[in-house]
Image 1: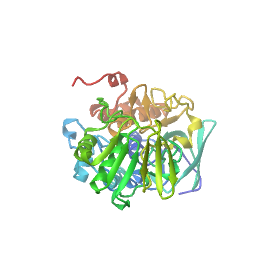
Image 2: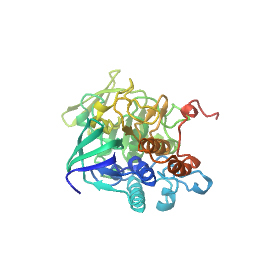
Image 3: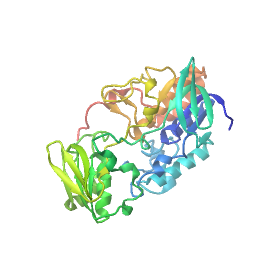
Image 4: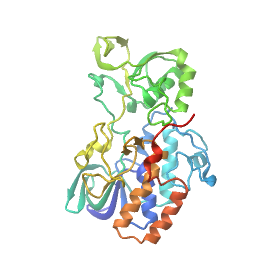
Length: 373
């Protein structure tokens, strides 16, 4: 690997978003490479050992109902891993296998320090020198960028992303701060370890029911919580304002002056900041913090900068799960291929497979409304 390289397209991140869009670029014959600061699927390898996918894997490809956790129409984690709810380590194995099968050019151990737009090119300063490209696809994800500023004293807490295994945590009780999936996952696993858990849910996710799991708990999580509900103290609509340490104890203070005390460091499950903190000057953001994109998932601030992965949002359509954001891979690849003047015949031939297997969602009007029942 040379000190300086120039290619048509650079993809930052070798997780499901980066690899998924890379497969289409390869089929289209584009010149690209993938920069990954660790290894393929490294975010999934950092998951707690007990954490599993909330979206189920099931082999339905032959009926054009592709496995929800697959990133190409012709693969299935259920088939390759032989499990319905893969662990993070399981899924990293799937990603490695897919990268090997398609012979994707993944440069591991290359950390991107900064990105600049100079004329019609992007210049990426990395731990291995400079890389230059015309088109940049940002696919670096969220998990390795935890949000540590949700409340005062959050530095006294253990963030969910720092948990290697819930079985390693000391003590017989824990306070979990923050609801939604990570908070409820931590709670379920801690109770299974025999610990007394107080879950401080800043919303009331047990009562929030929507047909879009981007905004409410998955059925898989609800099943697990119902199994342990009798063994935990669930405190909904409890907004934490600060955590302090007094002697050997941690004092968690809330908006309405209620306090909770633990001898163990609370677990912060208030979410992730996302990798966009590294290039936020190249995007404009909505009031709710999501990057503003055009219909091809290109930054409206910076031409030829595309976003794939869980930060993609268009109005109420949040593409935060694999089965959602994989439907935008082909849209990004199609636009880059069009600008590179790849023949329409070649583009259509490649995209037919994606369109036929529900991997191509252009009309977002279908994302409004609720299921009938």
